Image (cartoon, rainbow, N blue to C red):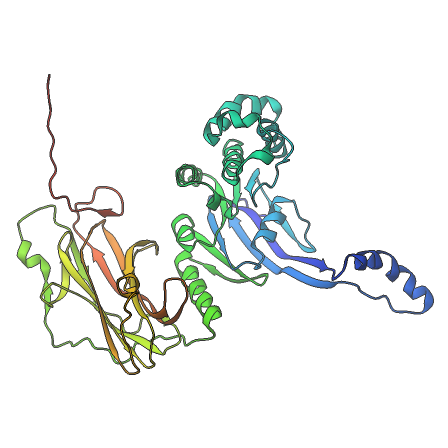
Length: 452
């Protein structure tokens, strides 16, 4: 086993026996043994469900790997086998180092025991002696922020308190590998931020397996992503690429098989129209200006959807309609999205996301809330133009892209007609952003000293 590989999975499979009725379990225990004695072939009283089939992958030291997939895809089953709480039907798992896991809510805790007793029990399972737990106990309680409830039975805890205590334990056992299921979604915002700070610190030297339905979190935290589907490894690679494919498959499953559109036909962008450099009005005015170079709409950008409506052009303009090739952060701009429908739509929605180079969503919006009381009437063969007018944020240096989409429905339930990844890309050059993703254009900054 390579010294850099800390998790090695080879042809891992898990089969569960599903019984239709409780008495079938007893039949399965007894009858197949005696049926051959009376000349009958052994009968099977259960059906097989393969939660995982022939799964193979490696995780190297220091990697943060995200695992995504729909409910029932085998994610939790995989984590339980990696932690040793579930035995594989076939295949093998090799792990180097101490593993700490936060799986489904309440796993590893005895509800009748107090929080204090569960801390000692859980930490001992993870390899700590009572003396080691004694030294760390106050830090564990302080991190969990559950105070006097530490001496109350865990069955009286809320779901958030249980997650707090469970995460606090794994944060103090000096693990080499952290395995975290969706459980963090239960905690409140403040504690989740504390967990994220710990994870980012741990990721500098440790290995993390992170399961989540939140593709933004996977793109943000992970170096690599695995996509499980029906117990099989469907795809692995860069988190941004895997998340986009997963999103595409999700929409296809919700609304039936659609077209994988790679080209936006009927492009409306007229190359004869001049492009405006918004920097011209600000040349030499400030050395803190944020210069953003805008690239043209990519008509060959990867997309998906039913194809019954298509985005035909995306561009930035100023308030007078001049197409912009350069934008200055902090100035007013208009993001214009043009589309063409081939069918009548009851409630057309056009929206966008601005994403950074990791695929993390920086900001975005759509037209639904502005028109849900009075939807725009859209017949077949109609041309739609959506305009989003806003003050361009000051962006940290780097590459960005805009994902756009047109759908029919509402915020929750809609048919995705055309979704385009990276319809426009742009690059932030000179910038005044010191830290963070975006800088807010300040109206005024003042500092006064009152010396009494």
